[in-house]
Amino acid sequence: MGLIDSHAHLTFPELMCQVDDVLDRAKDAGVDQIITIGTDLADAKRAIELAEQHTGTVFVGAGFHPHEAGKVADEQLTSMTSLWSQPCVVALGEMGLDYHYDFADRSVQRDVFAKQLTLARAFDKPLILHSREAFEDTAMLLVEHGFQNKPAVFHCFTGTASEAEQIAAMGWRISFTGVVTFKKSQWLQEIAKDYLADKIMVETDAPYLSPVPVRNKRPNEPAYVAHTARFLAELRGVSYDEFAEQSAQNTRAFFQLPI
Ligand SMILES: [Zn+2]
Image 1 (cartoon, helix red, strand yellow):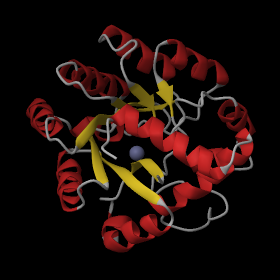
Image 2 (image 1 turned 120 degrees about the vertical axis):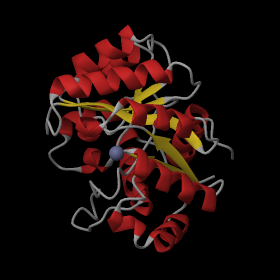
Image 3 (image 1 turned 90 degrees about the horizontal axis):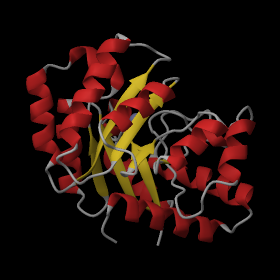
Image 4 (image 1 turned 135 degrees about the horizontal axis):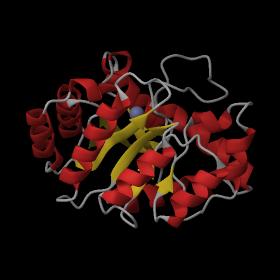
């Protein structure tokens, strides 16, 4: 059993233009399954098309990314929910709040996130959350909408140890990108070192955030999740195979992926 990249953007132009090669290289690197994330309606439709061409290998997360929040009309939210019922869509999102870039007004971001959460309640699928410098508001909206102790992952977690603890206490989880391999990420390495073995998951967030030792390579791609897995295995004092198997098992269970 190989690795799973639990969060990539295969439909972004840098990867989509060479997607067959990207998928071949992932396979060669031992990455068996990939969840590709569609960040608006058009992107989610492309992601579903790709998943339908690669059944069993590519799965989809679909939702309005907070960066897109300024462009989301109510009828688009309804269209998104019709995509959410597709069988290859294994997760709702990424959705959430980004107070770092502030590409959309914060109140608009909260509104679009809240509306997606309201709609998400009708689905029995886990949430993928994008939360950057916005932990308190993200957690508050999740609780307000009844998502305490419901499956939700703070993807590309780069928060504090205290936030990681609060996330665990609420029944949610975090996942790690190549950011954990960066030299400046000691605080994150401390969190990842002791993070729960039966919950840990890895992702690339490709085409962004290439891990060490390919940090200067652009674009990042799912094959490189193996570097992050190797780093985490070493950090946690387990073998690569053990880490790969455990993280894949966690990911498969969380997103209810087939073997
Ligand atoms: Zn993403």
